[in-house]
Amino acid sequence: MNQIEFSKEEKAELIARIQHYFDSELDQPIGLLKAEFVLEFFAKEVGAAYYKKGLEDAQAALARRMDDFSEDVYQLQRNATE
Image (cartoon, rainbow, N blue to C red):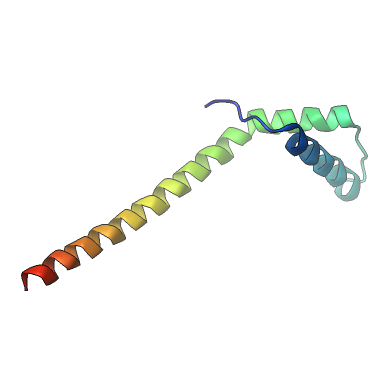
């Protein structure tokens, strides 16, 4: 899997959210550098699993739609021969 790249603005927003989470939920303020390390860790170690799950979900949704489409085409073919 290719590494996911974020724009400067997206990365800054994610880092700010990590800092806010640590401060508000864990009562442990962290600096910019530590928050960036946390973001990089999760992107590297956990991100691929979420990405894979998202792709699997998208593939399943597409398969369901293709089944529906195939059924619609079959019905059109049946109606055309009647």
